[in-house]
Amino acid sequence: MGVTTDGPATNARPQTDQRGLDRALIRGVAWTGAFRWLTQLLNWGITIALARILSPSDYGLYGYAALYVGLVQLVNEFGLGAAIVRRRDLTDHQISALGGLSLVLGLVLFGLSFLTAPLVAAFFRAPDLRWPLVLLSGLFITTAIKVLPKSLLSRDLQFRRVAAIDAIEAGLQGIATLVLALLGFRFWALMAGMVIGAVASSALAVYWRRHRLGWPRSWEEISAPVAFGSHIMVTRLAWFGYSNGDNAVVGKRLGQALLGAYTHAWTLASLPVDRISGLVGQVTPAIFSAVQHDLPSLRRYLLKVTEGLALLTFPVAFGLASVSDLFVTVVLGDQWWPAIAPLALLTFYGGLRSITTPYPHLLQAVGESGLAMRLNLMGLAVLLPLFYIGSFWGLAGVAAGWIIGYPVLSMVTFRAVQRVSGLGLGEYLEAVRPPLIASVAMGAAVIGVRAALPAAWSDALHLIIAVAAGVAVYPIVMLVAFRDRLNSLRALAREIRR
Image (tube, rainbow, N blue to C red; front, top):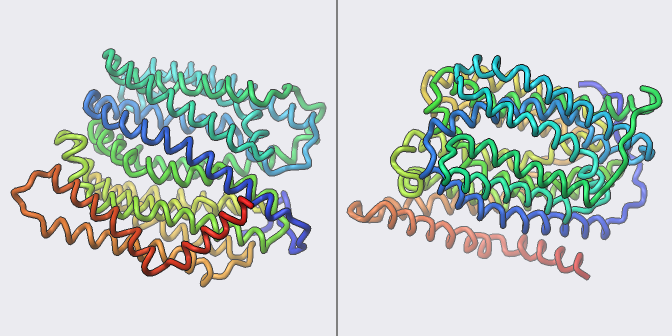
């Protein structure tokens, strides 16, 4: 693990506008959180409604399409958005050239996707997949158009507008999907909803942050940001490979219907965690980039972000895992029973994944994009074999691959973060200790309450009482055992407001 070409941060500590960055971080998370929770509530309701309208086979076909399109979209963006956010020394012409390059890549991939759609459908043995893939190929163009304006908004710390762009995309996607599903379009509703949301968000991004597109006068003027972007692209491809490798294994070995159940379990386990960690991931790259040469400030922001993520995501993960069987049978229906075991396992993985979200952003901010790339390639090599071996034990075995392999990958990545930032293990563990203890206590309370309830009571009543117990126990434990930690967070918020 050597030093990368884009240069690591030094130990020099230039003047940092800490109060200004604190304000930008808190406001960015607040705006992003507000928009994402609004769309989260909307999409949770829509997801539950769609489970009653569409079949596991419809979701299985959607899982194939999303797997393919998500992979090509990562190549489409080529990491150029991250390069624009991190490289604050880019000239106006360099920025326009990167935007033009992104659009050309999008058009090329659109054409290739259109031509190869029949081959992809044949690979998955799903003839109905061809024309949905053709429809989704339009996402390559919308993504290419959105890269430049959205990256510039992030670099300028305009997080409210970035959050609004994402919220409008998610909200329109959910509403359009539900309407089309009610009209009887089945799996087409899932595909068309993605396209409608993407078109709207791209148009809004261009409206809010126009910037001309150009072409480089010479390769040398964009070679450095493109090299950085290539590291980001390979990192994301490796991440996509292992984060979707379980879907590919389930689809190939266990079939379309079980893939639909697994995809739905993944969606339910990931929705709350992704919305929380995603809102922080939207903000932290620009914040880390602003303090990339100030290691004490970098460590401070990492600890604060980690503590905030753990406070919000750990109780969701432990709570959903403890009622996963009731949730599936009561809310989704008996047809989704194969999703129970993977849902319980994947929620635990989601809690761990949430607090590791800032790791690659920090490594990239200090110039170690090559190191982040190699770590993700290691994850690909470790997790894919685990998914394949686990598939011999069904959906639960595949989900168990995450529980076994991801902690190992996280520990190795954390050691790299320690090396480049000087972060101490003790201070990091102290940041996650209170929410971890409170979440374990909450999970134990929920299990105890469920065991004490009369078996004759309905599953719906069991679920309501168990959720109420969890909602009560977590804040009580935090207030009684860790009041000082909550007070320090409130004090920080008041100082930023002043």
